[in-house]
Image (cartoon, rainbow, N blue to C red; front, side, top):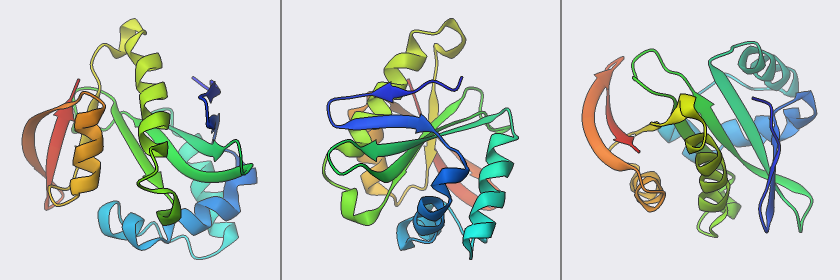
Length: 162
């Protein structure tokens, strides 16, 4: 599923090597490291390797979210089939200067609505750390409901589902 999506303010496109500088910046933000984890991306070359790893895994899809007005990559929305979840997991991450502006909702909602029309995606999960209140608020705004808490690799995760 390498589909592009467009909303009023955003364009979502599949992650490619051309996004290496953006990925390098995003995965090294304090929010990414705190809530998602250090991906050991310390150079643009590491970012290219990270992109290749993602794109070579059939269970993972990343879309880069571009702000149409600024012609600039501002975030990601993701779809991942995690081995510890029953259904695919939707996720999102944005550069700090583009949070709290409705972009994450707009992008994630566009992907979610597309997925829910597909018979293979009648259920979508999302996982987050219980202390990530902004993610939880967005998941609930998207219509996902708290399902359960699980422990995975020593981390307590809150699972939401639609």
